[in-house]
Structure formats: structure tokens, C-alpha cells
Length: 152
Image: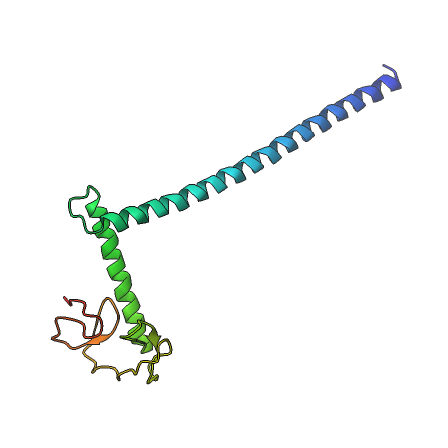
């Protein structure tokens, strides 16, 4: 084997290896692009599914005979728990809810910053708050004096 043949053999192997690397790089790039496109389609489908679920919930939330009434009740219970947590946060911070416009009002504010309504001082501490609006309620009240929600 001559030196020329030896160098030609090395050159061919290097060329073949380079083409293999180029092919793998092209494949990797294409797979990455396709994975990105898949992720985008999954995001779009998830957003549409959320919209569909919200529309279904809105339409059937008061239908006790709906086939997914148990799931709707679970959602309703979760929203009620969220409202209770939010009310606890407002109580801890001393924030009140304006009875006129529903805006949050600081503990030291005499008037609502949203609509200008005069704010009454907070009710006596009974430890109870309305689960809907977060206003303090008397211990024996059946309804919230601020929003009218029935208390349990």
C-alpha cells in the first residue's frame, strides 16, 4: 500500500465520519424542531381544554342531574375553600371589602379608594368572617351583613 493510497483511505474515512456527524446533527435539529412544535400544540390544546371545561362548568354548575355533578361540586368546594383562605388573609391584614363596589379597603381607610363610599369601622371581633366577601360577622348571624351570603 502506497502512501497515497493510505492517505486516500484516511481521507475517505474522515469524509464518511463528517457526513455521519452532519446527518446526526441535521436529525437532532429536526427532532428538536418537531418537539418544539409538539409542545406548542400541547399548550394550545390545554388552553382550549381549560376554556371548554370552564364553559361546561359555567353552563352546568346549577344542574344537579348533570353527569359530572360530582366534579362540579368538587370545583365549587375548592372555590369556597379559596374564598375562606382569601378571607383569612384579608382578616390578618385588616383589609375590608367595600359594600358598594367590592374593592379591598385598608384597615385605616375611612373611605373606599375605588368608589369613595364611607367605610364603617370593622365589627367587633367574633372570629367569624363571611366566606364570600371576608367581612367580619357577628357570632350568631345567619347572613353576612355586607353581601347577604347565608352563613353556616
